[in-house]
Image: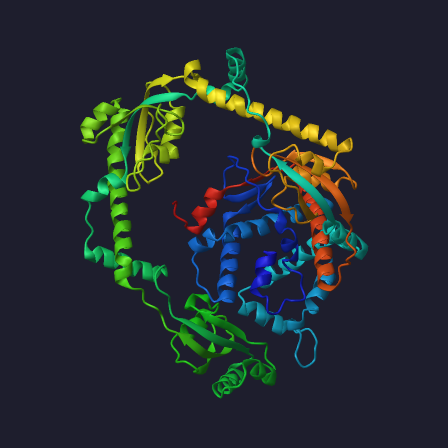
Length: 639
């Protein structure tokens, strides 16, 4: 709960480093490890776990904070798509790992130390005396719906963790001399001359003998082996088969339209900017409301009356306001109106509505066709679901696909041998049409086809398009070497290509030898057709696109006069380069550039240390995640 509570009371807990540990460990991520451990866990770490309730509470607080800060009202589903659930999981996992380590080390916290930390929180101090005010702390905690026990636990856990992490990553800072050397290293330059060799620079390869070609085919047999083919019978029920016979009424479309509006998926709800000042009593609340009505600045009002700084909800929907009475009252008020109210937790507030953004109604006609298609698909899926119940009963009774097809009056599909990619023996892929996708575009059908036993119907399985299917493999042609005459032409072309590459390598090696023995690059190109020499300056930290990677690496590892060769960026080409001059960087980084290099270098070292720390903690503990439960607890429907 460290980070989430810290966010919830972010306006007055700036003195506590709540959440900094999580930020520092964001690089860890969440492992994609799946085990069958049962229970209410979203993540398990050895014997410890993060429950669905802990995750849900953390997710909701994070989403509420994000919506409030950004003036948005995104839903759980939208937040899930944006990856918020992963961010929350990372924070919870990091907290739990650090907690495990603190327990293993026997780290404790002196209660006096914890109380001193609380006393140092500026927003818990009396504005006049500067002394710690327990009443003010209780008021702020109540205002933010945090119990005293939760807050004390948060402080205790934070201090425990602070005794663990600083000992590991504290003080990591790259010295200026390191950053300077790193800068000069990555900005170092080399002046080179190079040529590029292609197949045009060599004589054409002769045709192989039959023995050479057969040997070549044997060496690269995988390229000349036909895949396994399966002949199948398919019972396939898809929404697109039924939709043409479905109808949707205007009333149904209108109802769906209104439902999406109510969910906030269409249009935009009314939003308001609400100022809330927490008062000491009814009298000070009324004074604050009157001052707000007169147009005075909210912060000035709070300072004048000795109250805490105002909570400002900028362009929010009603549900984003924490206090339900404030939310209800503020959405009844007129723009610029102020009033004093008694909040849900017994606190007096002065509230002001500084601006109102009216609700935006979506255009029905623009949404109508999409809604109609959605409703048609849903109806089709419902009908298919009803049919699958009948099919499963018939399968239980031992009926074949043909008998089931006759019984439900649904046609079967027959495929006369397809491979794992959904292509037939001539190479034509069964992609189908955009409106009626073929089996090649449905991985679930292909997967079931190639794991099914010969002669047996599979159980019904769900297809990619929201339908259901069952497949029977009627015949199998095993993967086998293609006939020699069939592959002879293609193999001959491949053999010639490989011979050309051998000749090209030999030419490059010979040129390098000639240069090392005294020839210049200009003398070398005289024997090549239309070959030009390119002179170029390259920078270590910005490798050029027109040079092969191996050439760049070798050039920066060489001394002046070195000759290197390697593959060019383009296929079937070679390059030869001569290092003409080493241009050391005389530039020294200063100011912002130096700071950026230091910060990034320090962070990289810190990340390495943190990763090693994590691995050490998890050495004897399995970290497992249950992503299906995340969707369930958030109410995310399967797509």
